[in-house]
Image (cartoon, rainbow, N blue to C red; front, side, top):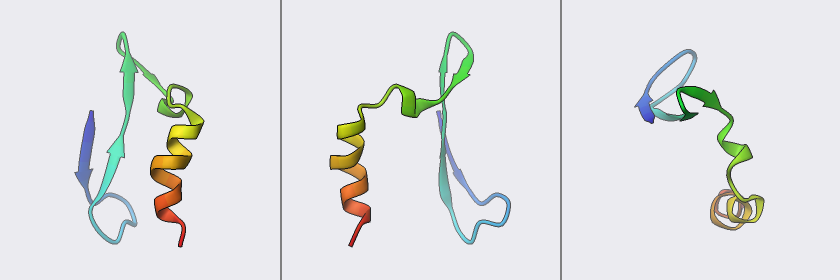
Length: 47
């Protein structure tokens, strides 16, 4: 599930992302491949 909106001290719309397995909230980073995150996300955020 993902929800976009302004919350807390946010200066603009941003995305909140969460994962559940059998109704239990989990940390999605534990399920994502570290190399995929580095290649597909982090590499695009660095100048």
